Image 1 (cartoon, rainbow, N blue to C red):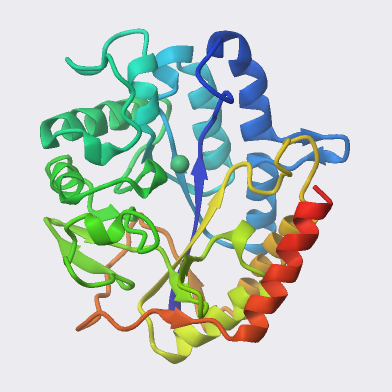
Image 2 (image 1 turned 45 degrees about the vertical axis):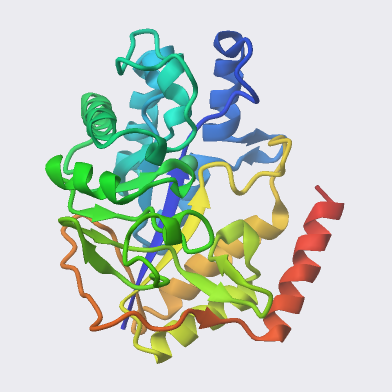
Amino acid sequence: MLNVFFTVDVEIWCDGWEDIDRKFPEAFRRYIHGPTPRGGFGLPYQLDVLRDQGIGATFFVEPLFSTRFGPHPLEEIVHLVREGGQEVQLHLHTEWVDESREPLLEDCRRKRQHLFMFSRDEQRRLITIGLGLLRAAGADAINAFRAGSFGFNVDTLRALSASGIDFDSSYNATLFGPGSGVLSGRVVVEPVACEGVIEYPMAVFDDGTGLRHVQLAACSSAELESLLWQALERQRKAFVILSHSFELLNQAKNRPDDIVVRRFRRLCAFLDRNRDSFRSCRFSGLTPDLPAEQPAPLTSGLWATGRRIIEQAYRRRYR
Ligand SMILES: [Zn+2]
């Protein structure tokens, strides 16, 4: 049995930092509700499909934007996820720190994109603020975290531990994971205990050209399924998949990305059909299962890579 974590990062962007108060309401609609002429393909749609297939998922919700725009949009997100029967966990994009109406830290004059650019005390403070915002918006039992853009380091884990958060899922071997200080010199691909928390790294695979992370919009269905079977065969402990609240939309976010929508539905049906092999897991109530050592990354056969490149080329052409 393989524990599969389907994780969705929920966040809003205003296309730059100019005039964001005017742009926010429309950005919220696009990034959260995803209206299109064929219906909504944002968060409520994802929640409906997950519920229909009986798949548990984790929604890492970014709350710092609400220090600028007020609590109601965040309350709406938390309400949607909870009504959808899924769990809310904490995601932080520090790009919002200097946009807050009230200063969140002593030094917030400049924009710092990644959490690792903040001291351990500052990280602790931001995590506390994020937890407070999510709880005030109606989320409870938060026990997992993901740093925005996977930009974390070991200080993040220390700050999480001090804040009573048991799990982190910020390690991405294709981004800042190897420089984070977690098992320095090794590529982390399976859960590992570090600085008082259990790190659940993003699933990654070697496609012959290098490491890639497993993201709904960036892997074909054939590739996803072949990687899941391979992870099961190798008796992996966990398989963490990345998606976003706006990932089923095209780049302009005005119509669905049909290939990714189909891929999402197919993945949910696959997990539903193969419940005797794959368990859709969440962090709430999770008992961690750690391997004795870190194995080598999964690999993707060339046929699957070829199929993905064809699918991605099609998507770019028909966006
Ligand atoms: Zn994010």
